[in-house]
Image 1 (cartoon, rainbow, N blue to C red):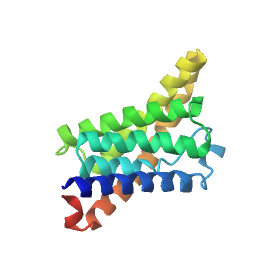
Image 2: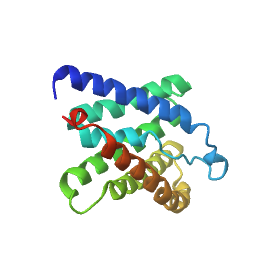
Image 3: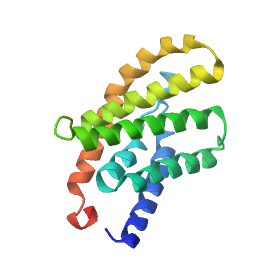
Length: 170
């Protein structure tokens, strides 16, 4: 992939991640399960992992989290740190699983791993910030919610990649 094409792809994926982050706010899942989200922006993480190299995909994750927090007015707040920790752990685990276990895990499985990692990282970060390990009692509920949200993100990622023109892939 040429440098220009990679730069444009990175910019497009960051923009798509921001749009999905905003769209996600229209689904009040956190009214049912406090703090829960669909994780639509993780579609961008999955696309970046498959389409790009590690530095480019990592760059997308970092810029997406920072810009989304600036837009939402949560930069450097607890929400920012929760989002960043979740994004980083889920990205690293999804990237490693995709690169090392591609033959053992589908994109849907990788997405579910990412959703579970995201929730786990957020609970660990929250426990550290509030200095209370009682929050770990909430983790099983979030992990259970990781199954349908990870499935949904994985399916959308799979079909998006399936229908991308081959010229976009390299």
